[in-house]
Length: 400
Image (cartoon, rainbow, N blue to C red; front, top):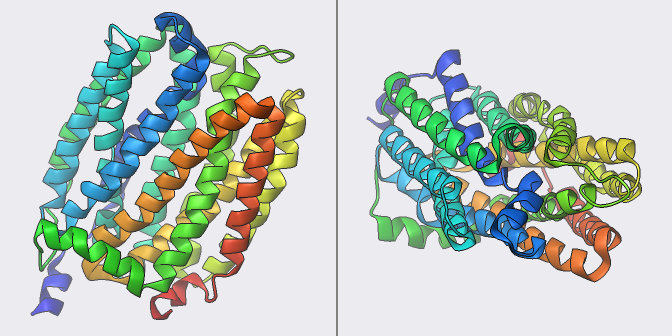
C-alpha cells in the first residue's frame, strides 16, 4: 500500500518549480534587505549603526527558530496550505517593518518576517517529495537556486529601491509581492501530505533522535553551519566597510556590488544534478576551497572594489556548493521524515548564520574590517575541515 501511495504522488512540472523558486527567493531574500541599508536605517531612527546591525542577527535568529518550530509541521500538515499560510504571515512582518514608527517596531517586524519566512523550507522538501524518480537533487537545486538568488539579489534590489523611493518602500513592496505569489502558489501547487503524519510533540522530540542516529546529518549540518557563519561575518559588516572611506559607497552602489555574488548562486542547480550523479564529494571539495580562498581577496577588497567583488563571487560560490550538496543529500537520507531532517539541517545552518552575524559585529568593533576578515577566515577554515571529513560521495550517504 505504501508503494502505491508513493507512486500516486503528482510530479511537479517545470512551471510549478519555478514558482516555488520565486517564492523561496522572496521569503529568504526578505531577511537580507537590511544588509545594504544599515546606514540609512540607523540615520532614519537616530540610532548607532551597531544597533541597526542587530537587525541582521535578529532576522537570522528568528529564521532559525522558525526552522526548529514551524518547518517540522510539514511532516504532519498539508504542505501547500502550510507554505502559503507562512508566506502570508511573513508578508505581514515585512509590512510591519516598512511602516514601523520606531526602531523597536522595525525590529519586531524583522523578527516576524524572519520567523515565518521559513515557508521556503517547507517548499524545498516538498520539491524533493514530488520529484520524478532520480530527479530529487535536480528539483532541490532548482528551488534552492531561486532561494539563493533571492538572498543575493535582495541586497541589490534593496539598495536600488532605497535610493529611488526610500528604504521603507523596500519592505512595503516586498509585502505586496509576497501576497501575490502566495495566492498564485495556492493555484498551481498540488496538495502534498506525508503518508503517515505524526503528532507535533512527537515531531519535535524525534528531531534530536534523528540528529543522534544519522551521522551524515550531523556532519553536513556542521559543515554548512560553519560555512554560513563565515559568510554571515561578511554580510553583517560589508555595508559598514563599503560605506566608509576610502570606498564611501551609497545604498544603491552597495546593492550593485551585491550583484557580484549572483554568479556563485548560478552553480546551485548544477550542484543538485551532481548530487543525483553521486558527485557530491567533488562539489563539497570545490566549495571548501573557494570558501577559504575568498577571505584574502575580501581583506584586500576593503580598499579595492575589484578585489571585493571577486571575493564576493568566490565566497558565494563556495557557500552554495556546500549548501546545495548537503541539503540535497539530507533530503535523500530518510524520505518519510524529509521535513524534520530538513528542519534539523537548516536550523543548524541558520544558527551558524546568526552566530556569524553577531560575532562579525563584535569583530568589527574590535578590529574593524581586518578583525572581521580574520574571524571569517577562521570560520571558513573550520567549515573546510568539516567538509573534507565527509566520508562518502553524496549519492551514497544514505548508507552512512
